[in-house]
Length: 106
Image 1 (tube, one colour):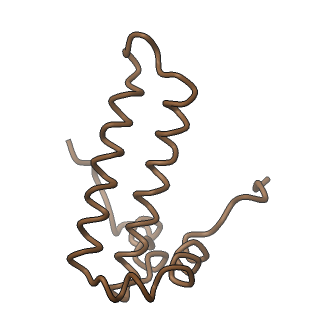
Image 2 (cartoon, one colour):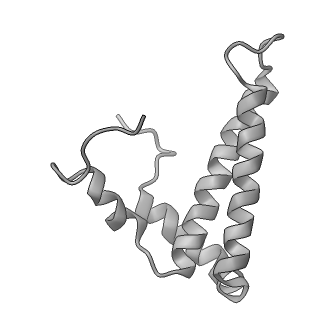
Image 3 (cartoon, rainbow, N blue to C red):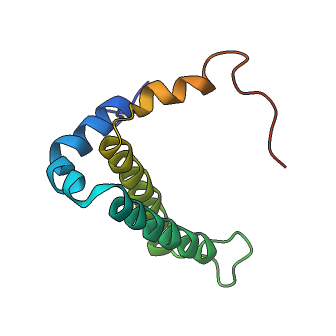
């Protein structure tokens, strides 16, 4: 059963568009991409802080920060898609349609 906090990809992208598109579109693709990359860097740091073999083990605050960094990366990715007119839910269909994406990367 879905949690009442669940949201579809399309609904999330529309929420980001409604809240931020005016500012995001004015910033453009290069500036928005740089914000995305900054958030990816913050995610990388949070992943290191929560490494399974970290001693001492990650704290609850470390784990909460990790979750927030994942959310930030997804939000900035949606922003970049909005600025470029890409419907992410449609783009993700390549992973749900049999035979479109096969194999794994090593």
